[in-house]
Length: 356
Image 1 (cartoon, rainbow, N blue to C red):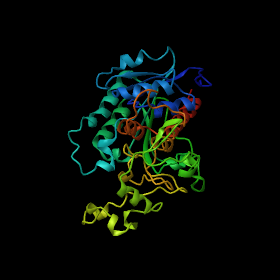
Image 2 (image 1 turned 90 degrees about the horizontal axis):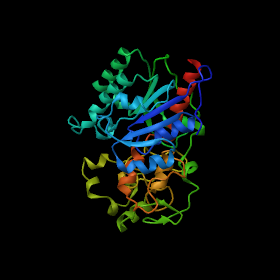
Image 3 (image 1 turned 30 degrees about the horizontal axis):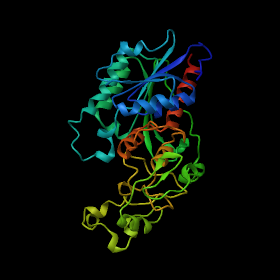
């Protein structure tokens, strides 16, 4: 892929991707026109999908705690504009884990490691994506302080994904920092009456049954459902909850006082709205509102990937390797939506065009 160049300086704009996973952010930057030379992650399972779908970017299995700014610097061509991007694992900061004791979670320190690499590398531009709740924590305030100390101009946005053509009710924190001046995110590309819906995204896929698989796309596969869950999903309406079921189908855990508050599980998606937030367990009917709007099953792995705005051709597993719902679900659910990565890339290009 040819990289776009700054019209004033004619320099190459080149990025590396920290915590790259399967390459959602990398793919988005490439789609925007930014050259990506490498992605770093500790998950070996991500190597195949990252390199298969993002050539010529290479995957490096290495912990950010072991990585040095010098090693990163060696990857960049001479006299280029350096971009560093990353999405530190967000589980400790997510609302889905609030209330849990995360104080000993080693992921807390990864944002500090990201800051260390910024000080060592001194990229021209950097961007970070995470959950909005990160802003409540001291680690974020420390990170902002580090950027200010190193003369970066910082911009922070809370991005509602449907505003940018992502078919998913998801809000993400997007931070930009630049030595050239503040970065403005590009304006929303979709108005509320033109949000991309579940039907827009996955309505054209051929139907499969619970436990079934499409013969020409092994990622279009759904988990098998026990008989009682088949009855439950048959009794579910799009956008509804388990409260719509007959009494005989309601699980005992939802009958006690605490369980009655958990209404956002065992539900179907609605065709005419964006999907719920895709988590690492989106393939399970009981893990959220992940039931297909019409078919009596949970959404397939491919459908989850498309709702994360991965291209339909994106390959997540080697052709002869056995498919693992848990492994691929984790990779898809943890990814930066590809379309959001493209928005980040376009915003950086727009900024560099103005500040070359």
